Image 1 (cartoon, rainbow, N blue to C red):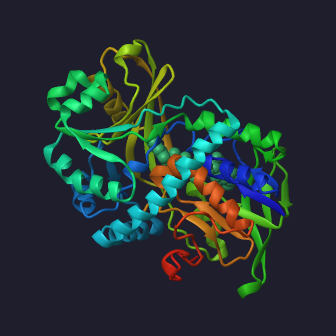
Image 2: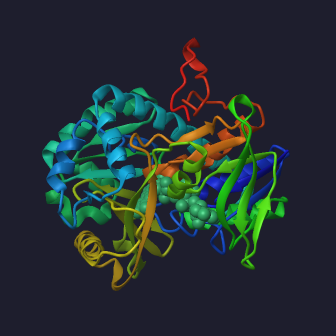
Image 3: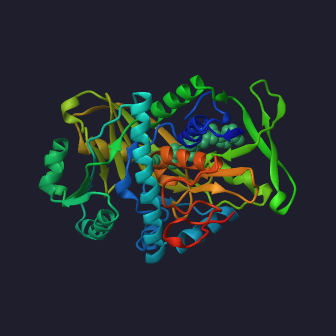
Length: 436
Ligand SMILES: Cc1cc2nc3c(=O)[nH]c(=O)nc-3n(C[C@H](O)[C@H](O)[C@H](O)COP(=O)(O)OP(=O)(O)OC[C@H]3O[C@@H](n4cnc5c(N)ncnc54)[C@H](O)[C@@H]3O)c2cc1C
């Protein structure tokens, strides 16, 4: 079967890889000059199954209200005269009930765990070097209430098979001695030794190269303008994708099947087809510093709960990422947010890095209100979705690609997950979630 994948972030690239493995003829269309140049470029780099709690949880509404208007707030909702943003906000509130939070956590853990195993197998198979560290993820707390509130989540994770252990402040510093300087501020932590970290950009570009060698055709510098359709009801299908190629020429590319993996930009492409995706951009920031004193820099991937920042060691660089601003599709840098990241990192590891030359970056997380992605079918029989991976696209990426390749190939993916537009296979019920 001839399949066109739209977008070459981690999700599109992983999907293309597994489609090729399944024997399909695969092309990937991407507007950038290479793979992983938008959200999959400089993120927090954590493979974090243990922190599957979505932002939409029972404590979120009060926190979001408290943070309104605060320039350096971890999650900032800037109201805009934009229907999608308001609708998204209402759906977000709906996902904050305990029952929905519980359901969403279970979904995210299922795909994240499957994905971590898939990533591990992929790195063994391909040998891609991406500064991977398998030293676990250590989450530390500086607020007693936040730590106490984390205990039930950690327990739920353990019940779901994820070994997230709640630990004392001394144990935190034992696991990551670079945190010794702030020992007196730490009240506790949790550690998941099976979690990992690694450079998403290096991995995705490495996988794209291997996929190309295996026969996948990547068309970079090519902008997708619309999908063409025909038929109604069960006969509805996509006949082609209209693009502007690298020479500026409009063309229509034909295929048997199409996969939308365009991150935050999937929503606008699908709207004219009557598919209302609830994916909205959540702008996040990262800063990358050159490590100048290796012994003073952490090697265990960290989450600083108070500042909602994640820290990953990537060879001789330190990546610090976090914060979220719901403010449309702009990627401009806000100096206050950038400086807040450097201030905090310097406070944590003052002697570790060259803080005078940070490399700042922003990216748009493709957020669904529940943080559960759309992976599966649509009402167009040859149009498939792999988008909306939000805060955990790197964690869920490899598995999402593999699962969708299975679905397109007519196989049932090997995990219990509410795939879009498909009956749920486990427990004997036929439950369709997120129909589009
Ligand atoms: C600050 C920050 C920190 C994060 N930290 C983590 C983390 O630690 N762990 C984790 O698991 N996740 C993390 N994430 C989330 C993760 O980075 C994303 O979920 C993931 O990168 C999304 O991948 P994607 O392939 O869906 O989107 P993208 O990487 O954005 O890929 C979509 C592609 O589609 C292309 N495209 C879009 N429109 C068009 C068009 N019209 N024509 C042609 N091409 C088009 C884009 O150019 C892009 O390359 C973080 C995100 C941010 C912003």
